[in-house]
Length: 455
Image (cartoon, rainbow, N blue to C red; front, side, top):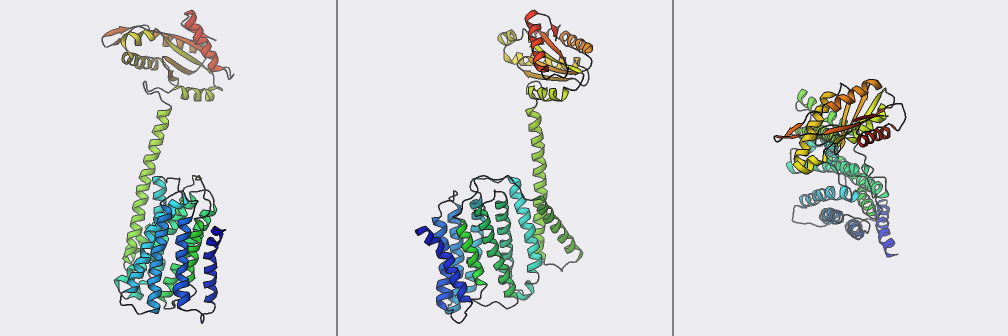
């Protein structure tokens, strides 16, 4: 019951303040100083008491962010009703400014407490964020700057706030998109959008000298903070849906930045020079992202090759042979399974290092004896497999040639080593038991000393 009352207080306070906005004559210090700033205090309490957030850092970070915004709001409200011998506008802007670093750190962690974003996802979100920042600086800031008459401090804040809002929106959206749909993500997106939209409206009204303290637009910030705070009490998604940032957004961000750079080169002075910073950074991150993606793709390709290759001999492994058998069923050919004779005493007498060298030389001899197009694989231990495409009669010749390659000894560390091989051969007749028949033939050849047995 207490929890419901606590959560209901914020919307009630906001609704009451909005109602007072319809009757400007009733509003005064009690509504614009006390009531207005009571709601951010409520937001801090609600966030800190939220029970469903798994990330311990997100809650204090967001509470600190709103606390800093509250400080800016209090300074601004007090300056409107009392004469204060201090640079109140500068102090309030600094407090508002400090809201963003904490919010930018907190909200993505809040949305995805159990998910670690990959390096490519971070780059994608940054590229989209900077692309939006470039667009924002171009569309919103160019008409704003002439009104500041070259005053550095107002110009700085005029540039910083919309860019920070765009980065906050892009990072929040990227985190929400990367998660499965949830009320937490939906409410957070609505809250951040309402808060940032109010910032843009305030900037536009401030430029046109149409903003007045205590107007209805001030409730837009309260609305955003209220929704963000309530989102901390919603159940989030436990697992991500592995969706990355939509590629079209990345392409548009890079294209936009490149186009603006070209326009700046063609018409110097038409756009403010600070647009170069987000535009160039966007392109730089895009190139870095492409390099990382290419390297990742190369590594994945190498990992796939290693997963299908025998480490010792460099031949395809059992997984590769079995995979190729599935594609081999419609072809005219044979499967041969080869098991070395007398190999175990090599390991016992000469050691495993010498045994490994023998296997490497066996693989080399077998490879040289096979015709082009045949697949030789090491199945493990001292077993090998061959997929041969050709007539059944010619496959016997190939099997005898493979056996002949081991008729003379190996020389390992100046020691002669003699081994043999038993080969089981099964013709491909389209039946799914090709591997079993070849295995049966190999064990019969080994058991009966046939050398080569075909079934």
